Amino acid sequence: MARFVDGATIVCQNLVMNCDGLRKRAFSNFFMAHGRITKEIERRMSADDVVSLEVYDVLLALENSPEQRLRMSELAEEIFYSRSGLTRLADRIEQKGLIRRVACPNDRRAMHVEITELGISERLRAWPTLERSIKELFGDRITDDEANSIEMAFAKVLLVENSNPSA
Image (cartoon, rainbow, N blue to C red; front, side, top):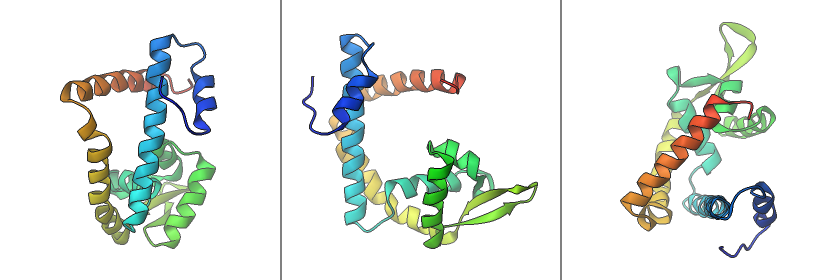
């Protein structure tokens, strides 16, 4: 098993207590690889003075949605954030002029978040750094067969997760 070098070790070990050896190693490697890759991508995005990965995620979700807007609750589900965490993040992004909140026309209690032209521009400016990072940190390190196996495995995990949202 890989040597763990940070506090994620205890979390990871607790998450996989009931897994067999192979699945425990697979999950541990996934967990650690995700953390390390994400941390390095964030470092590179900061060094290139582009939006952070979490901001990029929000901007991309909005850009790809109908009318380039979503309710806050829909956006939170889309990017796997709590509503309170998203509210704080949206406050920071809105202050930079990358998104704006607008009243939902069908429900006065709800707010839509929509991407601005500046938000689209900043997401596009960040893409080369993210694309290069994904290629160098992940894509160049695995074969096509490994990529196919990873894609199929996570498609199965997501299928089960999507069919049982309370799990």
